[in-house]
Structure formats: C-alpha cells, structure tokens
Image (tube, rainbow, N blue to C red; front, side):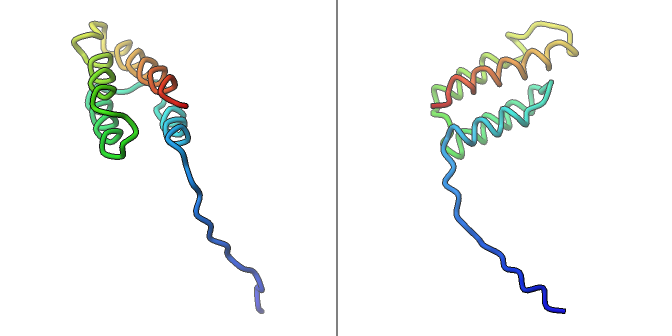
Length: 90
C-alpha cells in the first residue's frame, strides 16, 4: 500500500524573544543554583544575553542573595530568573 504522503521541511526564523519565552515556559517551579549557572552560560553562548546582562542574572539568582531555606530559595530563584528574562524580550 502506498501512503502517498509527503513531508515538508521549512526553516523557522525564531527571534531572541521566541527563544527566551520558550525557556521561561520550560524553567518550571524551581531552579537550583547550578541549573541557573548552566542556563545563564548557555544564554551567553547563544548570544541571548550580553555579558552585563548575564552578570546581573547571575547575581540576582545567586545563593548569596537568596538567603532563604532551600525549598523556598529554588522557587524564588526560578521566579526571579523568569521575570528578568521576560523583561529582556522585545
């Protein structure tokens, strides 16, 4: 039996905002310090943020600033990072 179907491949042009919104939607309810470091490093690698923005994201989400019990700290970190990224979208 011949399926007779076809596959179409198109290049999708994603903007910086598209990538950031995708990341925001996939961060979840909590984020560890090491997970946030990895994300921020990836943001730099893919030119989603500049060095100054990355430093601000890192400081705002660091354990030194978030002097809270762990179960709250990771939730607060995720909220801070998501809101800061939201403000970087165009």
